[in-house]
Amino acid sequence: MTFKEKVSNLLEAALGERPSLFLIDLEITDANKIMVTLDGDNGVNLQDCIDVSRAIEHNLDREEIDFSLEVTSAGATTPLTNKRQYPKNLGRTLKVVTQTEEVEATLTEANDEHIVLEWKARQPKKIGKGKETVQKKAEIPYGEIKEAVVVIKF
Image (cartoon, rainbow, N blue to C red; front, side):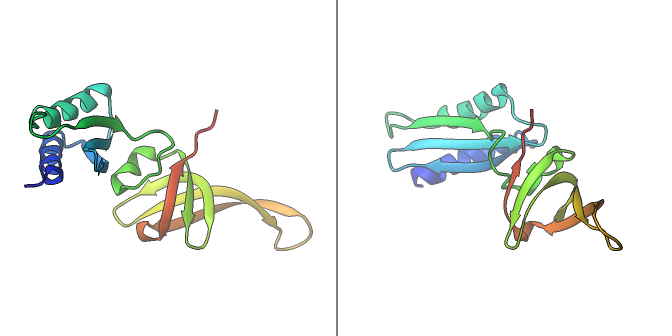
């Protein structure tokens, strides 16, 4: 079993004990630097990172292979890459880039197939001059999303 396979198996076992957590990214460099990025249905706290780190570190032998380990949570500006990240961001503003457009809107629905975004836009009146504010809604399948990021406003 290679070092990468062993780390992957240990990580899988650690996450199996914590069903609310899920893997965003696992990177192992040629210098055996292990970088794990996690997210959770209810967020990720420091203790979650410590527990996963220990589950990996205590089952690897530094005498056999020297390594470094970094377990972090997905940051606020990290793009959403997993379907499980969308439900916890309901009601937040997302910037979603698809093959054809870029939309910044409120996430109002997220299921297994698609997300629904809603926003207000100004457009020319159908009759007469001037513009009117209209409510827009877009249903975007996950397969069409190139990038989705939570927009943080202060």
